Amino acid sequence: MKVLFVGAEAAPFIKSGGLGDVLGSLPLALKRIGADVRVLLPHYGMIDDYAYQITHGFSYQFTRASGTADILINHTERDGVSYYFMRTWPFFDEPYFYTDTDWDGQRFVFFSQAAMSFAWELGQGAHGEPWFPDIIHVNDWHTGLIPFLLQLSDGAWADVASVLTIHNMAYQGEMNGAHMDTAGIPPRIHHVLNALGKEGNMLAVGLAYADKINTVSPQHAIELHYPRFGEGLEGLIWARDVDFSGILNGIDMDLNDPATDPHIEYNYDVKNFREVRFHNKTALQGRLGLPLREDAPLIGIVSRLVEQKGIDFGVDALRRLCIDTDIQVIILGSGNKTLEHHVWKLGHDFHNKVRAVTYYDPILAQQIYAASDMFLIPSRYEPCGITQMMAMRYGSLPVVRETGGLIDTVENYDNGPADVGTGFRFLWEEADAVVGTIRWALDVYHNRRKAWERMQERGMRKDWAWENSAHQYVDLYEAALKKRRGK
Image 1 (spheres, helix red, strand yellow):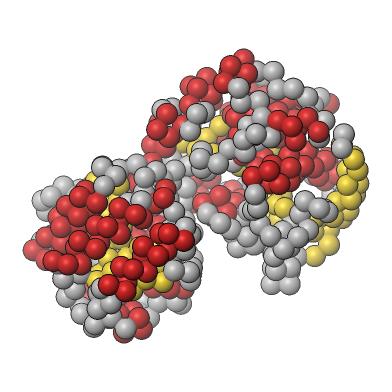
Image 2: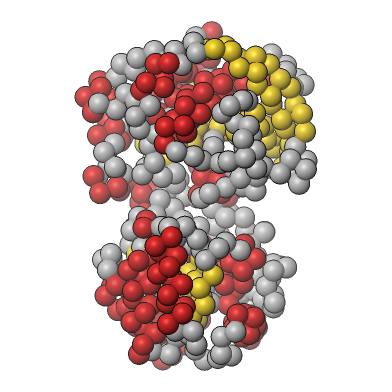
């Protein structure tokens, strides 16, 4: 099966969130189980060609209603997967990533059209042996036009199926109808799309026309049917319900292994973590200038500092806990400037208990996973999330809000001998809920140590490998092909 991924970002080349994580990992996992996978990305100016050995692939001209563009395709390989990068002036040639809503709309309308031309060029042998996809796997609003363009195409395209993955419903590429008209894209005639007035919404167009649709966890697939999470597109989700599912994201279990991770001070595994792991806590305390307190519960946060992540009420809760409990806190992340100040102020006011690092440091992130006793994730919504999986992999117990992938991955403690549980869950989006749940966790940490360690061990033994998800994606591709080809 030949699969072409098309998306706006992929780790390690360029990444802002979960979309980048998936396009950096899932294609490799699919390759390992036998799929023939290639990936197309925009070639943003800040991508480091030298570091990633990106070299010239081929070039061609692409004509659409608004003119002809010279397109340069560059190329590299990662673990047997070909990654292609599309450079063309003025859309993808400058040293920036995402920009303003209007300009990004124009850029990604072009990218969706040009991705079709790129696939055709590959099929004509533009880069070695002819290669033409069976599946085009598009991701989020940036590439939402491609399923519609496929539906308009015939000939060899008639056998190519589309799959759309929703990574974040909050970003939809709205108000792009004029850009589509200028680019020569025909009217989108679809009864639900038209009834909702979403013909210019690029994610909505993808939802209307993709052969199969999924999001990144089973629980979030349920949530997207309802206004709280559907962001105005829940009508389309209901209309496409028979073609809609949730597949949980994974993590790289080899790369993220406390037994071999070169970025942590003391390596450990599920057999010896009770004797070794705490040394990482004292090492990180010393490095960040916190009091060396093996007995003080350490709470970690590694997050984008945005409203979605619940950082506002999460930090309010930590402020209250710092007043009357013997905890330490390390927060790592950047984002909204108001929230960055909120986090900085906590560190300033409780300098003997809190360290706030308001930029992203991937090595420090690994050290926080390995050092923290608890890992706080108070997200308002979380399509999947990987930090809770990372925390459990490293033996830190997640404290999470009950939403999306956090429900699918974190088993709530049974408040007994820990016959069940890998963490602690709460429901309400408020500081009181966080305070109460962390107090519960602190009681277990201090007074039910065997239960705590049983949950640590259970979390460390969980298998979050991408191959589990990859097999489900192959099933989804086969279903999309069956629908597209009428078999």
